Length: 77
Image 1: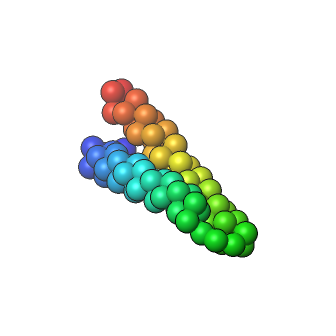
Image 2 (image 1 turned 30 degrees about the horizontal axis):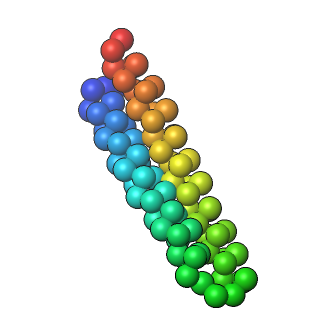
């Protein structure tokens, strides 16, 4: 791979890491908002939405960190 392609992949992985963190924090906020709901359906809706957002954000961060690690090991060679 060329240096430009490696740098572009690294930059994209770093952006995905930051975006994953934002989505995960937003999921925690939605889970926290569950406290202020009144009905059981609202509780379950907020819980499911929050857990889905947390899992998507965590997955994005995990994939981005794996990609960063792989690109940096290729860059050293």
